[in-house]
Length: 125
Image (cartoon, rainbow, N blue to C red; front, side):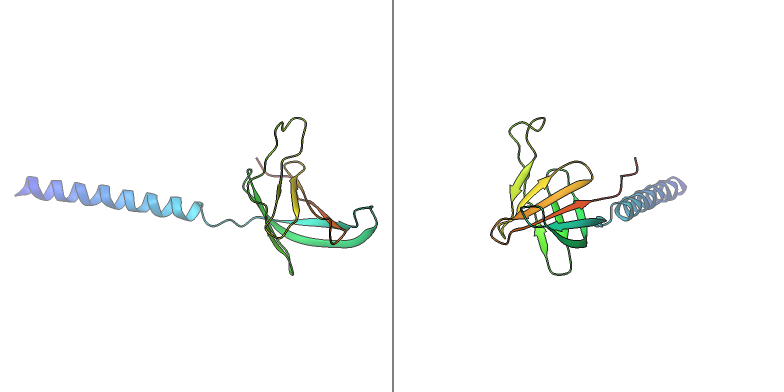
């Protein structure tokens, strides 16, 4: 009987450790929070329209921008040659979304004559 009690106790301990490990991993990988970035709004000819802020969730192959009155999802960014061309996509709303660098993003809407370029804080490594 003692052998079975030890085996049960050992199994319960292993199960408890596994459960706690899963909880820790779940807590550390919480939802996409993104980063607040400063945006510069301009016309396509470069006339300043003001500044804005947006929360950008960067997934490397796509990104999402959330502002007060605008929510954009880039969809998969594509470039035939990332060394030569900027990875881009067209959103469902018709905006051209571009990743300019690891910390700079741009969205352009030609019919509205509007462009917003976001500069985000440098990432901690």
